Image (cartoon, rainbow, N blue to C red; front, side, top):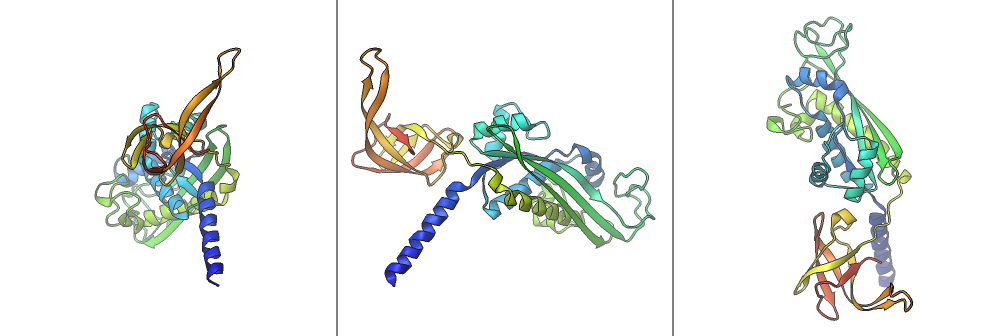
Length: 322
């Protein structure tokens, strides 16, 4: 019986490990909100980057669902700066693919905000509320007693190898509540400030926040459902030991090559090169395995790991996952 239980536990661990390895790596860029910019300015009194707020919420949802491995936003922002690109609507399918290749992800998720504001049931409104003639949104001069917030978003998942759109998704969130304010108390700025941004509980409790979260949840459910359309890349790691001190070693490869915390790599030492006697060209290198390293910390260009082996690691030793 005990042996049976152990077997079940081992099987579960193997299954979980395989599932983790099969997760596709994605990054989410800020959504384009040009279509609703005037509505945003009317609601907040100034232009606010709701595209960033929506992207942050999508990242949170995708991380929570576990279907994808999502790149940290700071890493994405750094790459965009280095590539002289804006984390905004100026990112198209081709530039998204280029960003994704630098990040080492399988896909970039990008999209647009198509609706953002109120859609009131009452026709007896005035001032800056919804005009049935112009279709614009605002908050001033409202005479009705019930407000309805509507938020629409659409997304595309772009394969970073081909720039092909492999999946699309849409979300439409609505919330109706007595009263006239979309933001209520503590709505604040969507990019931070007193309200804490779109990811804050303050914003989630507003009528607009309810509509935003409903639309994001719907969109992310569709993206999760289509995860099988994206083929995960086989990550091949080849690097060198840059520093070896005791049981810790530093490698000259990092997250840009697909390396992540928890990865286990072989450490090998080259013995000699075999050359073609006719041309002198190296045909292959002969090496011996001297140990293994388990990665404990990663940045874009380097990694740190715990080393264990038959002999101490040296600067210049080769590391690989194949």
